[in-house]
Image (tube, rainbow, N blue to C red; front, side):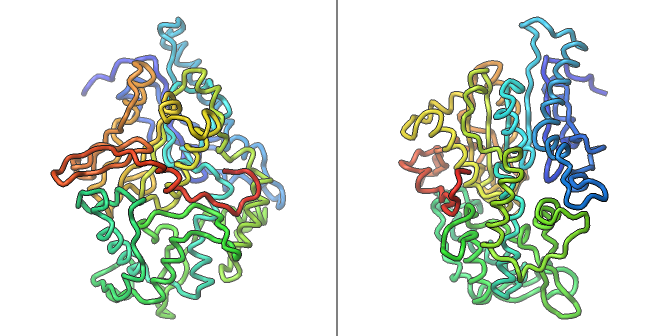
Length: 472
């Protein structure tokens, strides 16, 4: 049995996912870095307990348990790292400046939101933070993830998931070599302009994504193409204004547009779409009874109205879009954000938009990126989906040893210009993940570089224009 690594005066906090603050599944990661690993259950009773089971007062319909929401939103994490730092310092006698405990945080999705909220609210809690694919605008991200459901209902076309997959494969094939390398990875979604109508007639066979009893072969129809084209445009109001960032071409729509085969009717039905129902139950209906949602009665305009009320109700606690990180920077803090280019739940543009917001507010719209990169670095991960490798693009790199790179930045001043990447198989031509606003490019001879393109952010980011309040 190998001995445990020596303690190196570090605390590593791991964040949660969905409606949970618990990072229990990632706790073991701290050992390899000589760190004490800690997590919090948010005060909900255990690693498997979640906000959506505790938010409404028992038997008190119409009453939100505000203390539970406060704990979930930011307080539990702050109390945890404060106590962990004190306990580790006392246990390991690390009280002198030379032995001062360094605190680090890693989280993705909800965990990424928690990390950003920490540095915005308690800027001295952490020395280094990785906030990956963060759910920055929670009042908006949770319900609007399921706009595919009401779009299918409004368009009266419930798609076969195999058609989703067939179109996805066409997009990947068409946009693969936009970066100069043919490897089955959409590394440059900014250069991907595939017209979905080109997939009409694309056939599939031996597909089991539809479930037991569903057809295993078929072809993409006109209705399929119209639906998917609408989905990639993103949720728009009736007046054409954009309520949310568009998703990059090539994502897996079966995750947030899942449909279920009905053997009785021999047709597909809409799936469960839990996040939408959770928000509906907790904050709009505020009823302990699980609601029955009829998506044929839902529209983007109606959801927009309800999200507006949700921002007023819980936005101050749960939204992590505050762009002034001056106090965190002054305390010497460092932060890394990465986001997969094929994230199917939280649009990649969302993180890029926030990063640009921080740069603009802290240093000015015409500032050099070197100014924000002094303490905050952002990376697009080619082909990665939400917080994980992408089975549809297995040759894409995924951040490996990012915590080690963050530690080197904090403790040795070695800032990461790129992130180290690996693939599902452990090797790839793409082992380098470029720092925003650069992007990967291969020349005709196979040479690789991270290329800077003029006005890259302005070209890539389509900021939602429907909001008359300043949330972006």
